[in-house]
Amino acid sequence: MANKKNSTASPSQAGMLAIVAPLAAWLVPGLGHIIQRRFVRGGLIFASIAVLFFCGIAMQGRVYGFNLGDLLQMLGFVGDSGNGLLYFLARALDWGAEPVFRATSDYGTKYVVCSGLLNVVAAVDAHHIAIGKKS
Image (cartoon, rainbow, N blue to C red; front, side, top):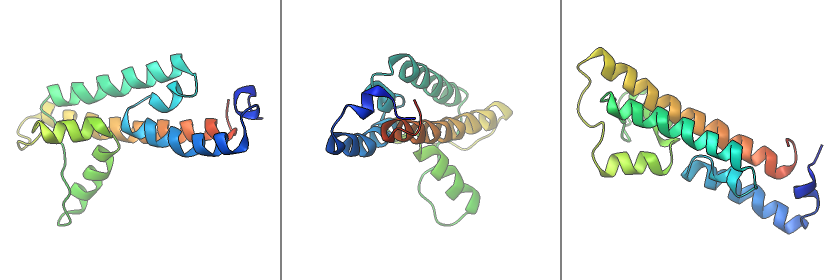
């Protein structure tokens, strides 16, 4: 059932929102929900993804770069790149570049990957709200 906010918008505005919302949600966690006036949901998504990401970085988790040599590193890159601007910030500041030597570092790596995958799920949710599949 379409919600009232999207049903009153013109078709071109709703179509544009269906493209902009998931891209914004990927770049900045929760932004896709915030631009659709779902402030609480957007704030909770931002807080949960940012806390998960920065906890992973604080545990000295690895941030994967683009690599075609190893399957696990490719999958790690896909998960990490789901963080959007957080991923690019981590790569630019060289966070998570050192190899993993401790057990907490391995958990931190998983936190960073999971935060990226959670952000992808949130971006898909923002898209479904924009097209009216979900309220």
